[in-house]
Length: 83
Image (cartoon, rainbow, N blue to C red):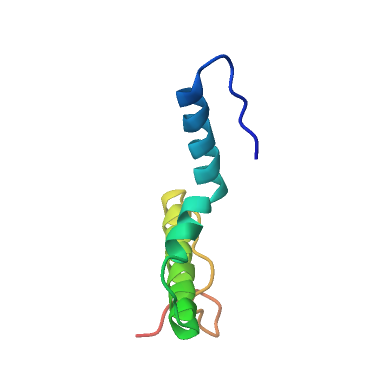
């Protein structure tokens, strides 16, 4: 990764570098690797993140007026839910 320094504008070059590194995900990766994480804990966190993404996409689709994907459908196909 390169950042060009024009003249003596070192501060601007540092800001640009930090922004590029943040967008690349380096700081988040460093934070994750700061301490050892057991494989079972990694798996649990990954599952929680996946649930969070699914919930977020479901909320977005509802906000757009689209019908939510998945869910239970009755055998008649009318979309009624069992109670």
